[in-house]
Length: 205
Image (cartoon, rainbow, N blue to C red; front, side):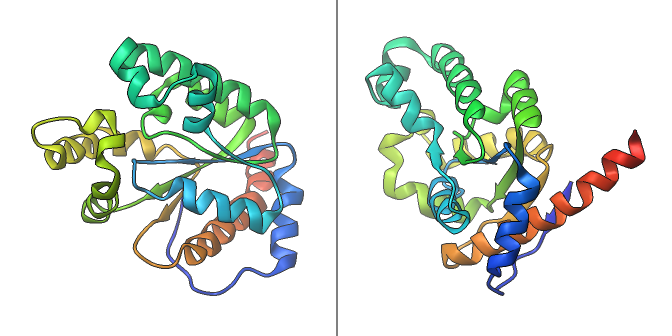
């Protein structure tokens, strides 16, 4: 795993082209906790690279004809996770693209394998205080946070999930800076990873 610190230098157009050239048909898959910035950063990243953007949660809602909160309420989390895995597997067939996934998607071993086969995974890692500030604005839309103590629930989820998020190909720190700065970091991380990956594969062949 490559851990890239925040950088404020703008990515050059030729760097974008190099990333796309080495990416091939793979998707850039953003993983991490709710509130990590996957959708907002993902949209900007897709625009920068001139590739489509897909939000797995939005696609799940389209397929189900109801909101995620309604899916949880009517059918439960297990039903939602099964549908989530199917939708992500389908979306991964459409690369190159930027794909934002829900907070629990990467916990599914089959989904991780599918992402590994068809994409490059990036964990947008955010500290608990940052996540709390962001999700407080939309807490009612988060089914897993409909508890007596949402802050404690989020803290527990973060502790449980971080070891799995750390299995992602790349880690980029998400914090309260302009989203374009995060996009710059993601592109720099991708450039470094994609430049090294062919050599790594050759060495392991």
